Image (cartoon, rainbow, N blue to C red):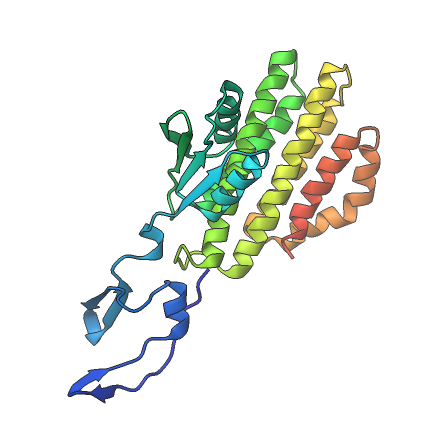
Length: 292
């Protein structure tokens, strides 16, 4: 998040006109240069508000990529940067397999669509809302993974497993979307006072733990196909622990977080028969650690 700049400046006189120099940090943050247009607005109490006529967040960021075996990584990098337009070129023309690969990559990203296509060029647009309610997206990740975990105890067939895996794919999309927005805050592309740097760091650590929980739940679900089941009461036990850890994080409840420290050894001993249960518990406990 961009910090407020508070400075005192003296008015200078040049050619009969008064002027004041602008803070260099503010100029760099908004990527202003000679010739940039500014908007002046007079407010109450004789205040004067100064802002760029076209802010950085209204400019379209465009990336040109060539199709290669590294395309997936390059797409992810541009997505996390917040690039709005991504053009993929292949001078030899796309094969059917290559087109399907690109479709699969796009399907993995949130709010991304193919908007233009030809034999040698595919254009992708990222329709993202810059003032995204990040905390709501974090809540979505949590509720998705909690429902995945709760449903482990009621799996009856392969379709139930597929439903859990489909939800994890959504968790992955939301995860990348949150990272993109957090990076935008940190680089100053989104100018907001909604979050502090500490909040951004904590949220980044939190969503990583949630994403890892989703990965371990996938392992539990796939174990079902091989006939390896876990105890219903242990799944419910983990769901309860997950709820308590997440609530402790939201409420900054140190007392609730400390309960995990006191019971960690016996809890892990209870779950020792299943590696996925132990790892899920570890990630849940790590969420409680973020309270301190």
